Amino acid sequence: MFRVGDVRSSGVVVTYLIGVDALAPLVALHSTCRVGNCWAELSLSQVTELIEHLRGLVEQASGDRGASDE
Image 1: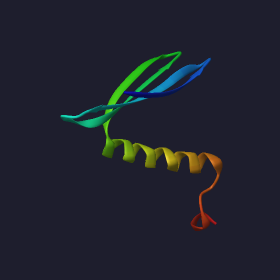
Image 2: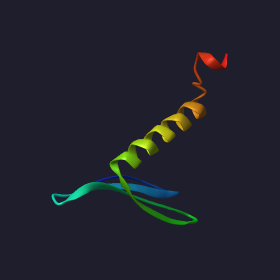
Image 3: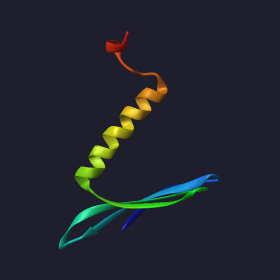
Image 4: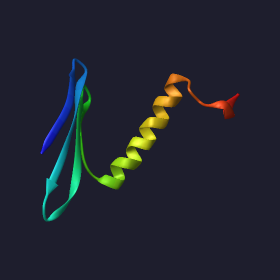
């Protein structure tokens, strides 16, 4: 198991890479904040999809929408 996470005053986001020889690897995502907790176990294909969605959100938030929006 490999753990990566950031602790902040408003909450924490932690990810774990779980691998077992007999099973497909999973990524577990655990998030806590002032309003509650969330937990998900994702396959690698689901993680890839999540990363693409997050990348798009970061691009929108940074104002980098590309030449097609001009």
